[in-house]
Length: 397
Image (cartoon, rainbow, N blue to C red; front, side, top):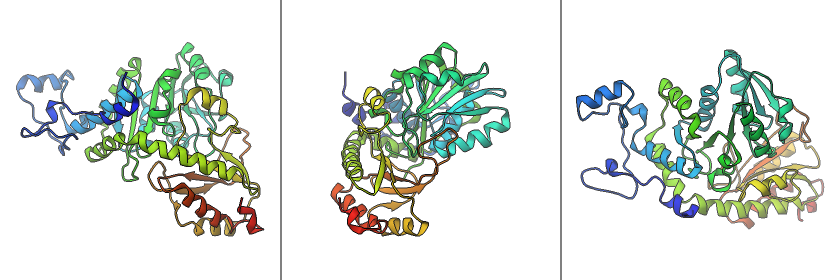
């Protein structure tokens, strides 16, 4: 069996159809087209009957999009993958493809904010009712299932507070009841977690993050198991959903170095998280790979590694002015949304939770550890934290 490193380097190898003018390059060429010409009348008629295996129109996915989708299908271990214009576009497509009016769906409480907004503001308009599960739900999910429950949406670890769900316990119950399970696997990527092995039906990746790796792509993917292909493919064809060929090319290029980048992200983030955990000013470090994480045992069981995104909470709640002084003093950490790129970032917020949470009304500092030298990042944080501490030496641990 090929290692993940070899698979990543050789992912999306293009076929003869992507060679042009007798030139075959390592990377596939990028096509920009709406109209795609058929070779003959028979192919045209086959396309009209939805029986054509080739590319019939630009929205069907041009060659580089298909190469990227094939690469993701292999890495995820699914049946088919479709690429979309962004991570949230992938999420909303999956939710719409597998729900209908009158359905009840269950979504974990620590889900990505835009996912929650889509459920509350858009799905609700079409008669789909959303109920939120505890962020660390497991077999207790059965207490929330109703006769009309059709879908369970997981994100493990979840956004900003990083709780982990007991995925095999949830999917076993869902499968018995014919409920579709979807997981947003952006944090771990296919390199560190295989949700299909845990019984999940549909996997979502925000390719914008680690897979592209350079903060210059907006892209998402949905990969489904074989028994979900027909429903998913029909919905995508009806909606004529597609992705930018240029972004697919960049994402395919990003896959080649994913394992190498994640190795640095993992090591650097663990070093930074361990340092933060030793500071008197810090109350919690929210990193699943640390032994003190509440679901560390689930991380050990299900994941093969960790990535560069985690959070921390201070013992004291500080004023907006002091938080601003801390953040604005940082030189290496950019202040901006998204994560998974080569540059370290930080965001700050208090996050909405429906269920009881240890982190309710607490300020969470979310850290994206990039590819900089880790000691430089620690020095930058140490300097910033001096603006919070009542006694500056308390940040010198």
